[in-house]
Length: 68
Length: 247
Image (tube, rainbow over all chains, first blue to last red; front, side, top):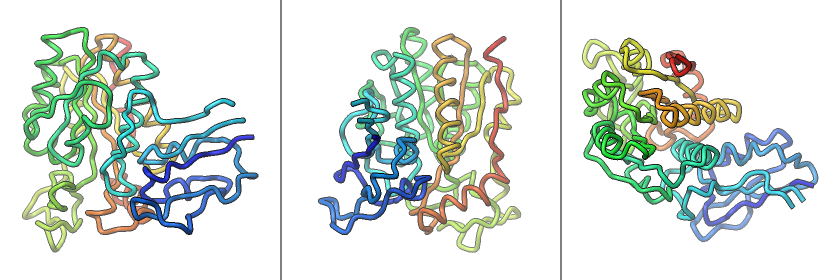
């Protein structure tokens, strides 16, 4: 099953990944990061299809897409 | 466990300094992927511009020169001629390439230098705080055009790809955008091709990327993407303007 990891220290909360996800898996974190942003988080991991569109749009290369 | 997508090996771990939602980061990643896929990372030498990407040397594992404002193509010419085995790129913004560096880019194309130029067009001076650039759209507000760009006073925007396509020495010119995953994929193909051309020794290749600048456009990230699609694309149509790589 595919999943993603968001590096909270790189994410600057532009949410380009949130709007790019065709399955609406991603959302905004409730907790603040060290950088002072609310990073993107995986909200519905069960819907992830591993299309890598979030990775493609991320300007900070904060996302890694992994297939188990 | 297989990794479907992760940060390219030719990029460093340092987090980028660009504003949230800026297109520079996406283009950096596409370049890193091109270096990895073409297996040229160990012989790439980059020329960083004056502008937002002035710290680009921090993000690539390759050697980088930071050039004087607009002189990227001239420096890249020198490096390429001294060391023909190197893969040399000049990474420039619109204030750098289309304004102060106009002579250098035109003459690098005239000489058909075997270099790759990545041109980031965001229609504004980003680093210095949103002044009018040569590529600023008619009516677009900038700090030095507070009522919007007026063609009677400041002229019309420059379309670099169309202009350089008139020059015999230019071999590959394409304009892409990074506003949707589809366009990012097209941009990746274009950037990879521009570096492939250099490996093959085709000649002068340039990829113009329409990039969003949410900070200086005073827009949210979705509004900035909308601006790229509705305002920039009619003035700067996407597509291949010249491709003589096969000949």
